[in-house]
Length: 489
Image (tube, rainbow, N blue to C red; front, side, top):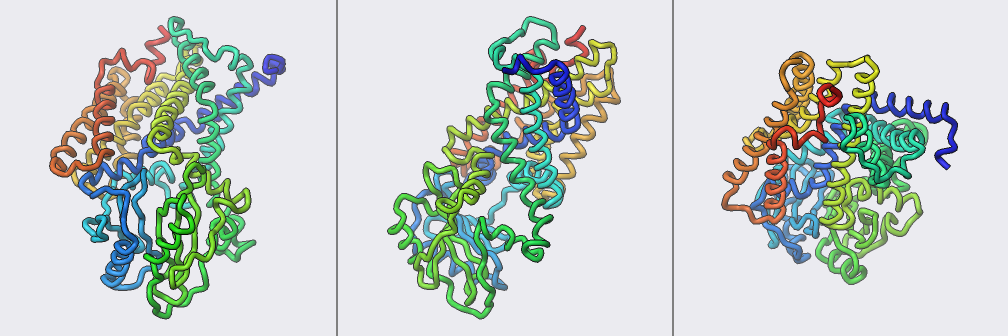
């Protein structure tokens, strides 16, 4: 079928594929690399505070007592108030009042503030590219659309892509090696590339759709705009009232839905007449992230939002997040997403390498651009490692982290262009490895007596392996950041 496509059409698709790829290459690379790390955000949160107790069982009465004591100790009533219950992926309990969160033990006693600046930085980088709210989400959504376009245009631009799915010419010239790397990884992981790109586009552009249409359909009320999908809050009535009965609600929920896993207990305007109370529960063996089950003042379950069994659109919307981050099948699925995320990052890197090699072979080299791209390839992990090292050192301001990341990445690109006689990218690679190594060792020394979390050991081990890879001799890293100039001679 593909081989019958007109040559002119194939050429046009190839040109559009190159243009789209160049326009978004740097941001796509940052997005893919940060997204690969973001898959393990729960594990990183456990790594940042490894001494927090972990457990899977907690009594409803302990949850009730913790909620009552926390509310009683607040200076003013919160608007949003919720409790995260321990589940398999995050076996910790925490309670949040508006912007402040605390971890708690199985007895419901608050033991420490939630303090995860690295995980917060990762979220800001991957969700928003560190831009404000809707602007950041929109840019990420547009990049998701562009990535989807790249997958489709890449397939249409290469009629023999599937026939040559296992054709690897590592002994050929640099351009053939890069092309085979790009095409093979693109084919082998194509379902993943499409799923991640499409769900990222949908999640990112949802806010833009709301901003555009809410003034017309819901008088500018964003929550009302999304209410048909995610439910709506009840009418406000701030007169004081007892907090809805959490312990009875959890007991009733377990009796009515023994196959579901309670995950969050949430309140809007708690301890008021108009309070809204619900239990977000996971549905094992389903792609939806969960469904909200409402309960009244006495703890009676009164219904659900319908994310698990409502309209098809609701179920699709509730599945986007889990599909995007691989949070639907435990650690094995996360590890698979991590591997595929690395493949996506390599596909982006090799795509630009191919274009640079083509220019050089056609007698139109772009030496400064080649160096800038190598600065991007190694400057991004360097900048991320620098932020991680700052976090371990106790610098917890996310604003500082954002500034340091972009200054470091921009500086890496500028230095790579300005110093043609120095292998800046190789220095950046080694610095990234050294920073990771120092950060892991320092973190271990600081938390030596409180490494209770298995995830903390796992993250430390993974970071040490990656640091060792970054510090390996240059020849072993050729496939990641091959030099177009040297490789083509």
